[in-house]
Image 1 (cartoon, rainbow, N blue to C red):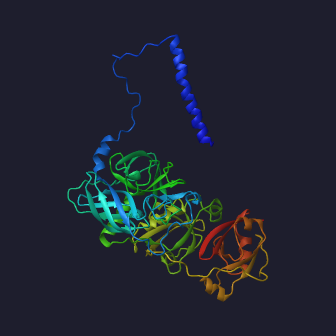
Image 2: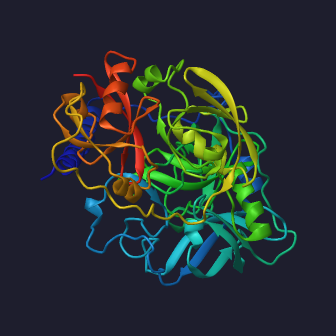
Image 3: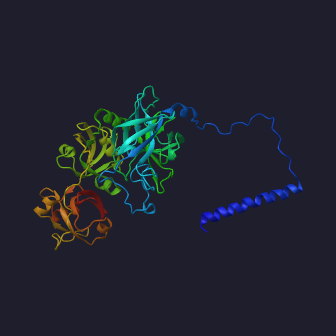
Length: 499
């Protein structure tokens, strides 16, 4: 018998014994039965707690149930391999009704081809907001109103990266929700209304746990999620997250779970971002985002020391796309972006939403720390491609033969790159030096591998083994050295302890 069954058996035994003990006691001296009290009603002992009754009555009619019939999955679409069972899926962000949801059957846990979720009216003439993953690949969408009327909906537009979709039903004088003009803060009360497991107009409440959360498990780097402890489950997708004024502050989108059910961590798309996406979908049918053209890293304590930063805030530039907006503006690897148009960049995950919320062609002012000094860099943003693509470069092979330059103080043996190798890697003349072998403890613990290409030591570019040796000797810091390392098409700064 497993532990839960033993616990239940124990509780059952105690519960069975209690009536016997009570009966024996009553046989000795029977207690008088209570009589109806004539005293005034008891005083309310708990005050100040929110009562959402009026809010739900006012806004509830604008919340709708959405049922979408899903067509065949397009070629190349993501999905769970059929041989991958539920027990082998690790803990990660799970969409309620997306194609990757680890539940038996189709996206909603029922027959394949049916997706169910929630939405809400934002205008009295029938515009509805919901999640992209609720209606993705839908051949027909049915909306059920609070008065049980069912209407066919048209998908005006849908954006996968923000997970926002705009629908339209025919109607006049429909109830609609107001959107909040002020951002929520951690600790504020919020309410969710939706259809978890098909249970229409279920109400749950909680508080905002955090704002500006990044999602490392999905392609949604442009969404600064609102995290709450509101109970959200399958079917709440696309429903409104409301403040105590009944205004929409977010669209419920995801949960963090290793079981597929609510575990106390829920995520919503901020309504200001959703409104921006909606306006573009309504006018052009697609969403355009600004692009800076840089790769970024977190600012670690070692990086803060190496790059003479006052603290570890900001986004550390590790690569600059040739010919892109950042390249034209003069940004360089090793620069640390601290603000965009005066809005602070606390971590590297703050930067993509700030840039992505701006339209291509926008002129932005970046606050950058370079060589210990704060400078202002004006940039005109490019347009982000609708669908990403591979870098197209070949994976570098480990270097063979004896290294040139020998082992350095970091325990790294290096080999100069030939002109043909640089061309294959997409490097300019005099850029980079390849790691041939590693015998230093610090380099191994940092995760360096033979075949990696070192682009910089700190902010100093290196193009040969000799350059590397000189730069390491001159690098500040007695404990560790920052190396900009490229592997394949990705680059990142790595702190390597000196042996």
